[in-house]
Length: 483
Ligand code: FCB
Image 1 (cartoon, helix red, strand yellow):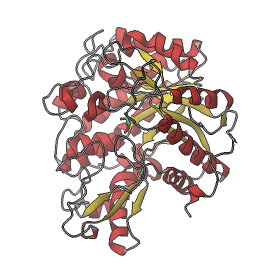
Image 2 (image 1 turned 135 degrees about the horizontal axis):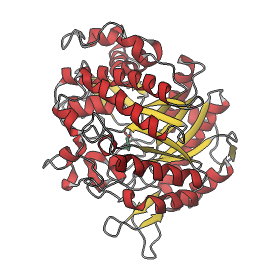
Image 3 (image 1 turned 135 degrees about the vertical axis):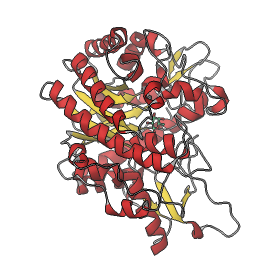
């Protein structure tokens, strides 16, 4: 019996009264207005406009036009009973060249958004970087180059100067694993480079950028602000208990999790990661003092979780079967996991989302309890969790998505169990508020609590949104039934 089967899912569970109930988005996925207000291209504009990179040639040029409709969207958040809203700032909107002076118009957009949220009683939670590096900085070498980390800290300081008086929750990076290893390793994300050494260099400079940005934020923000980083921690499970499969899991844990957690929370890179990647690089780009810079005190560790990562040694796949593809956002011939060439990825049988990701809330429970026991005293927040399904509006215009409600319910139950086991979890942000541009999948995958008609841009809360609104308003998790 797995841990998740121990409790029936029928009971009502109460969450702490100060628990943050939120939903999340990211700038490039929703804003549109790609050429307005002085915004310059980011790597995602360039990438999405490159033929063959994104499903059906979709781009974020218009996205769901949140830039022009943010007031309506905040109204919808109120209908959803949200206590908090996580969004990201488009770097090239507020600092178009990635260096030097700010574009006031760009900053003003975020000021207006934040003011609207505060007026609605919704706590803004700001992410500085959700993958949209200004193209000019990529042209200068991008994250594999050290100056990008320094630019990032300057940008963090500028945004903090502008919004520090009204935003309490600050996140430096969203899922740096994707930026480094999908952006520069497998190339399925912008900027689409397939250079394993560059991916490792990018990982280090993202870490360094995080540390420098935390220093800049602490200098600029008033006391009481909560600083975090959002990591897509992989709950890595070996396919079998064999030593080879456990070794595969160790490698993925090193290059998926400990590459961030080590320097950020413990002040050192894991030695086994250096050994695993020694054939690629000697890591001489890590300079004296860097790990101390990266190791800044944080107020929260934010975790994004969707599905577990099940791995084996490549030899542990049926003879003659095709090697399971690398996991991550998309498939690729290139591995996003440097130093883990002998690892195969598996998807457990059973229920899956429209992304093909197995549904397994027990892995969220395991992830939270394991992370809490490794970092006692570090409060956690779920900064993303949710699922894509094939949602369609019915003839009466309503959108019925019972699978999403069931997914969120089961994962919130796992969060509740973790809290009951003593884990300090402060909040939950549903991914996503709205259907949006799902990176390499374009508009082909719908994660929203709110349905968006991509022709009219009309918004319709799905049935799961009505259910989630009741949970968020009452702090009581009750079974969705046939929502
Ligand atoms: C996460 C990303 C988010 C969205 C979800 C589905 O990895 O942070 O932007 O794409 O996955």
